[in-house]
Length: 312
Image (cartoon, rainbow, N blue to C red):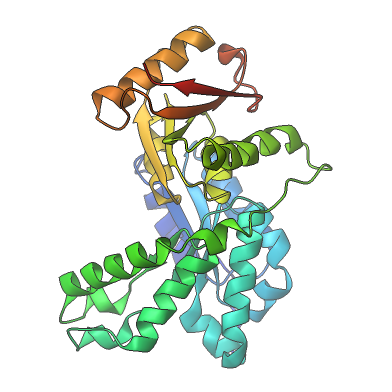
């Protein structure tokens, strides 16, 4: 095999152009081998003053050996099964996929499962039974997203394949208790332990009180990533004054975003957020919602507050 750097000279030229486009949310890095590859890209992105987050594509055996460090350094992970299936014994692929997803959820990193998901639909109007099961299992494992490639780029039935995949996802998520039972526990050694515990308990509390939604106010996106990783049985509504961040969070499982920049007192903000949801028909009188955030609001600390509210 030929060993090439993660960022080739052409990649660097492409990146220079990409970083002139403010609306870019995610940059996918191919052939990642180590956390250093990710950090090198991150330095370039930050030096350009760009907010784009980094998605590491796991395609090489070296990446598997360094997977914990790569996940920690990355903002998101893509399990690129096409190249990975060539580089490692193919029978190892299912367990590798499950383990990478588990580790990503532990770190609250969104994870995409990609390549050959509905491959037969490049030519056929319906998927095979094996493909249906493959997509459903990725959902049940806890993937944030499943990705189509050739099926929509060169396939004969691009609309049908998206519709079929959506139906499979919807059906699989009805049995999503499998993923909820695997909720990672926050590490007491982590510097984010207290905020992580609040996010996890917001997900648990949502089930106990049958909450309609969990609300979070964030400037960095951390609350959204973390609450999502616990797969609550409630909608996740995230509010921020960072418009770029809100579009970035569209990738994250279960997260729905709203622009909000009127940060006054905690009580007023909680009232405002409930009103926004009511106006959009997302909650109604008698619904229970769970608010998470930091107090005082204007300090922009880590999440340190959880409050249960009944909609008036």
